[in-house]
Length: 114
Image (tube, rainbow, N blue to C red):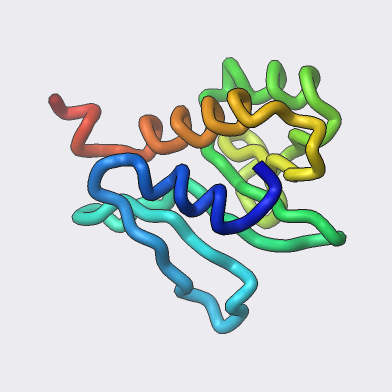
């Protein structure tokens, strides 16, 4: 997974989500839950690569950071709960998808209530 459209397509595969561009900078794409408008992924280009910010359980935060040099404390986000995934080809797609899915679950307030 190295292109924005691939990441957006994967994010759109979850129920009740939408793509948003809320900032004056069109470089930033935000994937949100319908209804609550909570964000589960920030997608943007930085330093020549596509980056994705995802929320993570603090118990897993350091695991991902230690497993891959391209998973770092989140750019412009709370470093305790968010990681940035740099899509430079070093993180396998299955792990990128797992981190995005976890972010979706952690931010899905409606799902937690069920």
